[in-house]
Length: 154
Image (cartoon, rainbow, N blue to C red; front, side):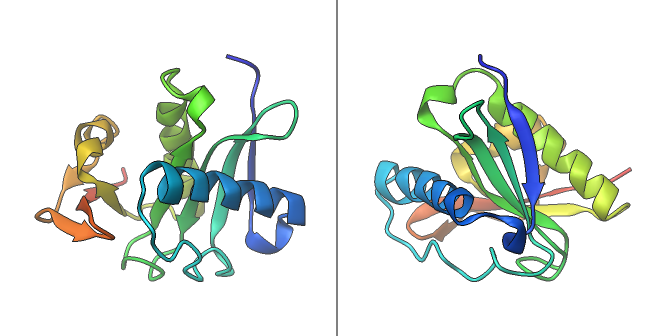
């Protein structure tokens, strides 16, 4: 796998080109690939504490992305979502590195806070491998089965 650079920015720190590339990746995967029309632009990207974490190629193309949400934005706890790996980077362990990096940033930014996420149900074991445990029954979000999961911080 080619060398990647990790970038973390708040919304106002993103350039227009960076924002366009992130939104294009998210729409291509969540709306087009998963055939799930839903309100992708939900207002949480622009929250003053939201952090946008991106793995960038040497050409500054996003290979992977997620957004970290402060406590109270989606859940009472800190959270992350819009976890996505570009198609040509899948199957190489990048998603594990993405989650590990997100947890490290959360531990540094909000020490001692537990993390709660709304995970697509088919990814339950993936998130369990990162210390998350199910805390809800399965529910439908935009027609896709999800489950809430929490990871307690040390």
